[in-house]
Image (cartoon, rainbow, N blue to C red; front, top):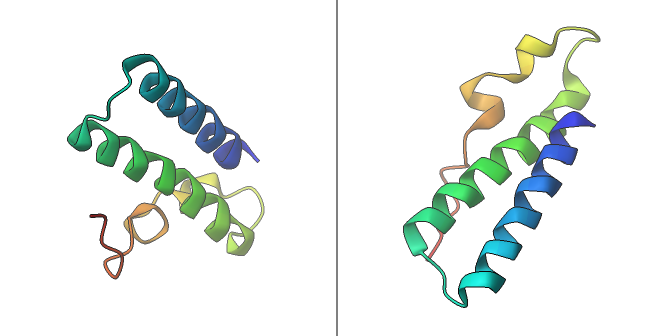
Length: 72
């Protein structure tokens, strides 16, 4: 649950930032979305991690943005 809670928090911060600035900094937003996605991806892959092995979540495979998705 920690990973999805973190994603929720960061998404809320991004929404607030966009609302406050009335503009989107594309590079910063892409970085933040990648960070949010990493949390969501670790949450999803966590269902396959043996109980108690939290370090297993923090691998490139479990954190990276997929290479078949393009943000434009």
